[in-house]
Length: 638
Ligand SMILES: [Zn+2]
Image (cartoon, rainbow, N blue to C red; front, side, top):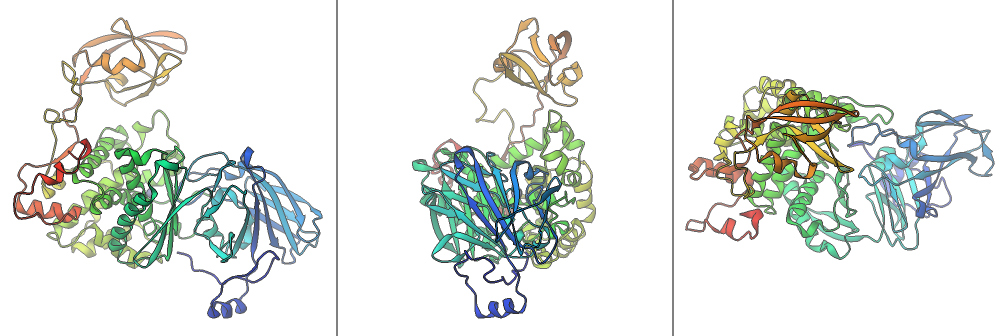
């Protein structure tokens, strides 16, 4: 984390007051830093625009440069935020006289100061992209992402930045981790430097704020859009349980106050920050167990990032470069291991049942094992190429890449078992993460540093194991993990969750995704080396007939399941208007379901390891076995 820098005093008149300890005052007097000032006006909120004025001292320079990031930390894609900037103009901050402003490149502007002491740049920002890393402004509320919003003087990134918001009258509250400058004025906020401003999203509107304390720190669940469908007090209790488990995990709480910005705005996603996170979810999410369970997983994930990836970062990210991509191979730790722990913490805090956890783990395994891209791209490459591949999926994505979230989580799970078995259960991946935190939070880490710590903790070198797991496409072997905890694959035969209407001749596999487009069955994706691929289907084909009969996207699976594996069927497709005949040989779906269940009779050791992994209490001595599943109620916890 970047150290806080003592801030300067009274550069602009609208600052009413600032809070200082006497020590901070002494430092400020020693090296007073001027301040970048913003004023935000939402008069044009109805048309999704915010008017922004940024004022900076000129420091006697003839020309000063303004910049805006092209991406935001945590979301590894160049998003060209400047594309939403309109009507840029510069004036003398004191006299309001126009100054010459030129665009230097896509995200930089040059202003001729003409002797002005203070320069103000005014611009309008269009805000109509609902995501955790972009901006949204409408009559009822606004959500601003720092990187997508604030121009600053290029050489003042380490200076304090103060934001004054002229909110609409129907916006009673603001939720952000940015500090107030005056306790009486919640609409003026201060960041110690530009990194902190970029790292502090701002939510404004009718926000429900639930505040709770855990581990001596204050936490706020700030929900917008949940209306009567969210019981935010109950949600805050659940969030508090996750906070407790994660604080206990790290054995250290590196913040004093933390904000969960929860936007129930009918979209999805999450983004981490030092002292807050953004969660996007559905208005009715809390009323559906699976969606709420997903939301708890999201809370757990983003909160874990307050340590892993925010304060404990891959070395390359220690200094953010807002103008360019930053390449590194450690996203499997930053995102993958975070993904391993997210659902695990929900289970460890008692908010999900062990069966729910195993179901999610099985789904994660299935997603990786059914993706041919796992045989094409290594985990390290997936991290390195996040900028051009992960955030830019096309119809070939599943064939050519593997998610560092999904596979990273599984390598985390397998490594955890390696460490547990190497130390006879005395140590785990938990210890590695804590050690990494202790030794590399200031310097940043590389995969080599991580590998060294695994060796330290286990007393055995896992360099080769990690190198192979990260740098090759070797298939993962789950047998050791299953055996360690007393788990097994659930066969299709015993799968009571499977639909009752099973195919008469067994499951048929083709490897074709169809989409209904204007009544046509369009081929959306073709799985590499699948029967569809071997038959010559192309993404973009219109699928007309199968075995001489017309087909529709909606009934395709049902039709397919009326056939036998190894049947050969004539298919007609239209490719750019020309009819093409293809011969499709159906295959049997592989027997492995990738669903995981506990073995019927785990050994004593397996039972102990299973309980230690999920933080389950020791079993009661006498016949209480049915309680766990029977009391959970509902199908999800069967
Ligand atoms: Zn993440």
